[in-house]
Length: 442
Image (tube, rainbow, N blue to C red):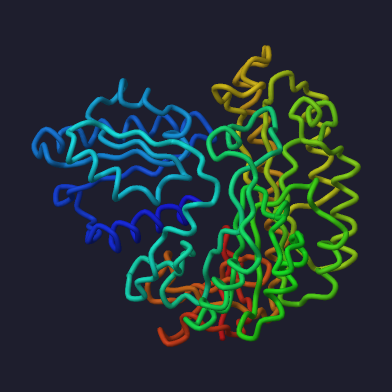
């Protein structure tokens, strides 16, 4: 989602303000920070980075510095008090107003703050794509296209209405708002014309999608997936991130009937303790989560499951943590995003009493990650000798002489090939397991 929003910022300044992107901060007329406030460490990094560009502002008074994203939405004008050399503060829902905000700053000489929530207005105010952009381009609604990679992200909804007690997203991105079906389909069809073959649908709770259909009726996420899968040219469908409460049977059934839907599901659980899940206000139990996984695996036996875990939530006991480890053992995850709990200002969990020492939490996180890594390695070794259909996304980050492709179950495999293969599907035989990646041959 951050890459998606950053791409939109760059494209709207290019199209609406006549600006070109530079990698050299000393050359810049505008420097933007796209921020995340999901954890305290990410938030503090923003102010550290702002401190490093202060000297540039002193040397070049006309330089405009902007802070966008969720920290901007959360802190608002308080950012100006902490870093008074910042000129523009804008939220995730107002990034389409960047050209006007920058112009107002230049005209008035005063800092501008706009962290309002104009629902999905921004999708109607984003520029047409610049197809030769090295970093990627966008459709008129802001869909990010990785040039030549054959894949793209399409945002289908904004915000979150779940209000988990630990999460700041509903306060920084607003309530759940879904884009109309026709708008999403228009974007996808436009991408097919540009050579995109794989689509990843984005949303804070993407499977909570409830969009207005062409007949005026509301359609669900399963209907949207079916509609996109029916398009000629689309060969693979992904989505992130999902919520257990929105894993309907209609959606689960698609894994049995829709081959274009990948054999990978990212379904955050956060904890394996019902007591902690209730304190988190997740709205589901461990048994319900395991039931979803069982039904998904019945529909698609070879599916890989990944998840999110928060370790050290206030009040988490050793018994609660052992329940999480038991869930991991029973489900068998291919990978996970796991972190120590980070209190977020304004969230209910930030007020909870917590007396568990940091050292204990850190040791628990280490144990959890070690267990997940073991399961990840087991999945990787099970792929040895198999032939995988993979989309070639570009040059390998580890070895510039090789290509990197993504398998159906979301594994990266590096192999020797030619640049002409980028953006196309190839069959790769898996020959070696490397930490977090695979190696193969055509």
